[in-house]
Image 1: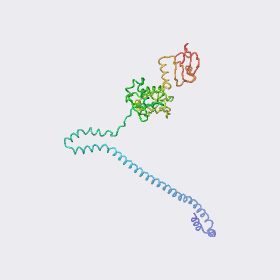
Image 2: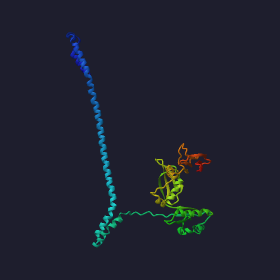
Image 3: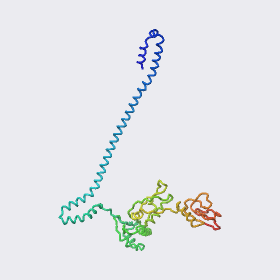
Length: 366
């Protein structure tokens, strides 16, 4: 900024020169200063713009380099994944192709008649080779284990159980049993027998004996998951429903309930392997009595049949401020006037679970 000023001063000259030139020189000086002021601003802007553009260019170049590196990394990862897929596919195909190669080598080394027989039997050999060669796990039979009571010998306990009249009809199923190293009696049950029913008979006998004999059922246990259960259901109700479905005893202690994201319940139940095979894929109605769907279906059916009075037990929920509903204090039972006759008199609820009302001159209790 300084050089232009000096240049202007040198051009205008000193004070004496201006005096000699007269008054015509001063306007020129002012004009040159004004023009100088108007030229200074563009010079500053022209200097600041290139610096900002250089910084943006550097940032863009850096981003382009990072993008190029990321592309290279993605290409390497995709190539590695492709190689791993090919290796996994070759590992799966190799065991299947080995029996066929072995069969071809054996067929080439055999005489012609045997080779023809081998070619005819090739499909059966290939199908047999495609089957899993691993050993199947041995299925253990259910068994009942009986432990002698306090102060009782194994022989006395064995004789008492084998000669009990209550188990005479089960003698062919229980068999003679065997003695373990801990002096316990183990009686294996056939696969087609109802283990829970037989165990119940044996347990009743053991509980009646003096001294009392302890017994337990040894069976393969698995865990079954039950979804979409009524939120008001109890573990005992789930166990009761599964007992009916599987035709096998399921205890409430074996049921674990938890709430799911949609507000319903899900249960994990420990049952025998035979019971699980019967239950898989089936549907069971649990706690239908205290559900909204059951209550709505009941009222709809009553209206369609023209029923005037409905006595409700295991109530789900009573509507508010409805003069045609009479409910006890604990909201468990109700009397509903579904027909054209209103409730004439409400006698109230003397005890929980009981409500009395008069409809059409008739006294109803629920």
